[in-house]
Length: 241
Image (cartoon, rainbow, N blue to C red; front, side):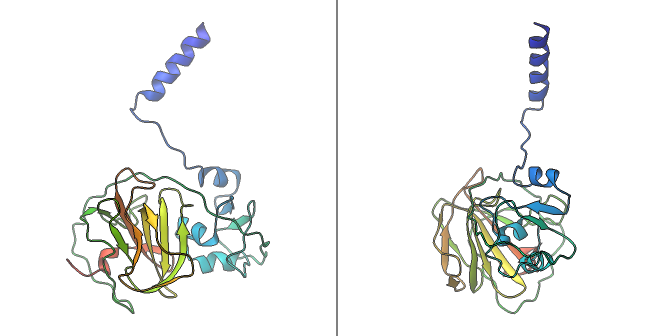
């Protein structure tokens, strides 16, 4: 009886905050079992997705792990996230799996943005209202969240090649990543439908997906621009509107 009462007390204490904590199993478990600078590849991972998850340039991740073919990694393989390594990867490819993300709003930036310079002109991927802006703070929003309706067209912000089209990154739902140059990537998350395939060449303004709520609590587009693997403020690159 005393054990039952104790269990009830602990249950009530855990519910007193009004929400249940969410544990990111795709990162937490792997990093707890290994060092803080290591990651164990799970079934469904790709090198591009792992690099994106840790805000790294995929070329750097491949280099420090001695990986010559970025398409060939295997479940259970331990990757170093820092330092140098000459260990070569085995050759068993794996695919991605679905994941979930909740919307986290960020207050608009107070200061005027300084436009960034790149080798091409960027376009807005969707005309929706900005729900949440980019934040450089730890744990902040890595891009822009744009409102919209289910099925709205999502367009490529610049010409490039599709390097990821799947649902294997926790919090991004159905995700498309486009490489625009050696330096720049753009990402389009929470789609209801992906209309392009990996390695496909796309043009600026081309429809690549349809807006959805996969991995999010409301229909929206989460859009990111990354330079050398690091998130940057998309509004510094996009035309003013």
